[in-house]
Image (cartoon, rainbow, N blue to C red; front, top):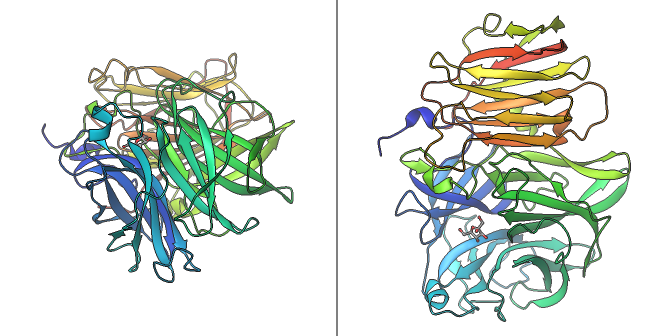
Length: 479
Ligand code: FRU
C-alpha cells in the first residue's frame, strides 16, 4: 500500500515500519524509560512475535532501538514485563534488566497441545541494549491452560519477593519467587468477577495511595468484551497481602472507554509515580488500519491516581505532566456563550491536526465539538446530558470501510458529580485521547480523514457557557 506520512503521529510512538501491538517490558532505569513492544519485523500484519524496543527520557520524544528479543526454538516472544534486579536475586549480575515474557510455541499449538504458552526470562547487563535468553527457559511451565500468558512481575517490598501476575484464560493467577527463576503459585482471582466477554490478557498489579491509605489496583485487559466492543482495559481496586488480591467490591470498571486503548500496563521502577501506556488500537480491526509502512501507535504516557466518588474508588488518568511541554504557547479564550454553533476556527489561528484543546464549562449541558474538513468529513466529540455520557462519533470522520467494525458512535459514562464538565483533548493526526473530568472518564479513538480535520466548531443546542477554552498546537515532533 502507498505510504501514509500524513497519518504519522508527532508525539505518540510508532515504529518506523511494520506491525506493532502490546507495550511490553516497560521499566525505568538510569534516566531512561524503556518501552518494548510486540513487533513483527516481517510485515504490516500480526506475525511471529519479537520484542521491539524504544526509549525516551522525556516521555514525549521516542527513539526506536534495535529489536531486543527474537523468536527462537521455544516459540514466539509474546507479551511480558521487565524489572531491574537491584539485589541480583537471579544471579545474572547486579542491576540486570530482566525480561519475563511468554514463549508461545506455534508448533505445539498446531499439534493440538494445551501447553504451548510458558514463561521465560532474558536479561541485559548493558541497560537494555543487548539481551541473553536464560539457558533454563522456561521458568514457569504450563500445566494445561491454553491461554497462560503475559507475566507482569514486580518486587513486593512488604512480602520481600517477586510477584507475578499472570493471565490464565478467564482469571488471574498470582505466583511468587525469591529469584525470578523458581515460581510458587499463590492464588487465583476473578473467574466470577469483572468483564468476561473474551479472554483475559496483559494484567498488572500495583499499589496506589489515597487519603493516606494504600490500595492495590489490578488491571486486566480483556478481548473482546470492551464497553464499546472489542478489546479494552478493565481494573479492580482492592488489597493485596503478598498472596491474594481482594477487591473492594464487584463493580466492573474501565481505565479507558474508547475503542482504541488496549493492553495498557504500567512502568516498573518509577518510585511513587505510576505511569500507564497502552496500544492505541483494537483487535477488531488493528490488522486493517489504513496506515503504511507501519501499523499502530501507543497512547501518551498517563499518570494514574485514585479518586473517591461517593462510595466508589476510581482510577483517574491524566497525560503525564511531561506531555504539557509539547504545548507551551496556548491561546486562551475567556468565558463565552457557545449558542447553537460557535466557529472556533475563526478565533484560533493556524489550527493543524496535532494539538491540545482544553475546555471547562460553567454548567452541565449537552454539547459537541465538531472537528471537520472541507470534504464534509467530521469527528464529533461531546457530552450528552440526558444520557449523562461522553461520546465520540467517527462514522463520518473519513475512511471507515477497511473494516465493518470501525465506524461507530462510542459512549462513556460520566462518573464525576460536580455540576460542570472539563475536557482535555489530545489530537495527533489520526487519534484523539479525551480526558474528561480530570481523567475520571477517558476515551481513546482513532480516525482516518482523507484530508486533515482542521476546522473546529462548538455546538450546544440548549445553550452553554464555556468558562475557558485553551488551544495549543504541538511544538515538538518525534521524527
Ligand atoms: C494481547 C495479546 C497478548 C499476547 C500478545 C501476542 O494483545 O494477545 O495476550 O501476549 O497479544 O502478540
